[in-house]
Amino acid sequence: MADSSSHTSSGAPAVETLALGRVFKAGRGGGEVVALAGVDLRIERGEVFGLLGPNGAGKTTCIKILTTLLFPTSGRALVAGRDVVAEANEVRHRINLVSGGESSGYGILTVRECLWMFSQFYGIPAREAEPRIERLIEIADLGEFAHSHINRLSTGQRQRMNFARGFVSDPEVLFLDEPTLGMDVNAARRMRAFVAEWVRERPGRTVLLTTHYMAEADELCDRIAIIDRGRVLACDRPTALRRSVQAGQHVELEVRVPGDLAADALEADGVRLAWGAPHPEHGTRTLKFRLPPDRLLVDVLRRLEGQGLRVDQVATRETTLEDAFIAIVGRGIDSDGATP
Image (cartoon, rainbow, N blue to C red; front, top):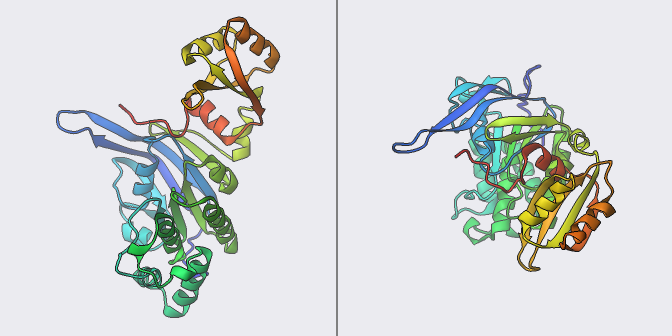
């Protein structure tokens, strides 16, 4: 799939942001909303780099700036060694973007026609575009729908076509913003395998991934930056992020008691609650916490039961990327991280 007009630049990183900031007006009579507050990132060529954060953390704003769809308020961003503001057209020739849930081309076109059209937008010669499109249709499992009009496709099929469209230009830097949103489990697995293969096929290909699926980020990413309220809180390899919160056992309880009472009981026993949520179907509440190394789980359970709190289920597990995320951010990835 390599493009004969390969445009990999010299030693510059694939993506670099320097004190990148973006402020939005909050509306009539309102103040300002800080979406990005001085973000510094350096993504090397050949990396699959993850950007994780709660809803409203600044991920989409960052992606829009890096793909020249939005100007920064302050700071600077370079993609493939080009400034996203001063050299926007140069950046656009070197990138592509896949967004989950976006509109899929033009409904009157077929899948094959749409992919061909986008290849021509990028000036890909026919001798390269045609076999590349065939391969992408196969990868996306759209062979039987290649001649179907886009407006006749299901949501999952349209998203698979969006995914294929992102690779048509064989970009130097590919931005995947929730790329498997709306896909079934098997399709998402195939797409992840293809991303890993595509990056390995030629040195210098780079992917920046945002996703709400922790397993997806853990499987694909060489490094991950965790962002919240417009600031980068941590940046490291997934194994290092997990290791940072590994001390102690990770425990999940299902209890029949109001959540605040259970949290109070745990904290009185020296255990800090990491996350809790109601379980309406069971009439219970799920509590997650990390047990300190010097504490025994059986002692905590006895203390809870001694206070009349009924524990229905207990599970322990190894540290996950979600554990690290919650420990660093203080809440889950699906929570609202917007600045008031």
